[in-house]
Image (cartoon, rainbow, N blue to C red; front, side, top):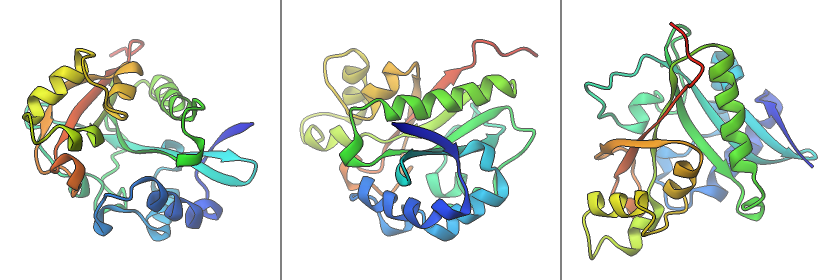
Amino acid sequence: MIQIVNVEPKYCAALEQLQRDCFPHLGEQELMTAEHFMSHCRIYPEGEFVALDGERVVGLGSGFLVDFDFEHPNHTFLEMIDNGYYTTHNPAGQWYYGADISVHPDYRGQGIGRMLYDVRKDLIKRINRRGFVGGGLLPGFAQHKHAMRVQDYVERVVAGELFDKTLSFQLKNGFTVRGLIPNYIDDEASDNWATLLVWDNPDFTE
């Protein structure tokens, strides 16, 4: 049975390995290490959730609070997460920035990703923040980029005409695409593009 818990120092080494298992296409500088996860434990452990099968770390959903500027949404992943340390966390921030969602390849298709989204949505509701924002990778674009622009690819995934294992999953979990972010991350599969994804908290009150 899968259990979801907040991050603790004892999980940090296994979380570093989980990054490598889940994101083989990312550049080395994009992958978080045990040192980064120790920083998360100090800064905002309430925002980072670990999926466990017994004692085995099999998933991660993490993030922190920011005041996101939708008028100027372009940013890079590394600058937003301060190179993995999450020191950009603002305790008064009105948006939860989803920095990572990862499930070990052996455990995909079991609903763990949805559980990791749901506990973070529950956190957003509990602390009364406006919603969830983040940059979404586009792993399926690699098979189509020779034939279409990234804008057309995303439109077709949103319309249900194409399937992208990340974006289609996020749409199913209630996120909407508010735009595209160029040079978001060093990811050869997507030519460094990401979607700007937003989930609005339906229970938010001023």
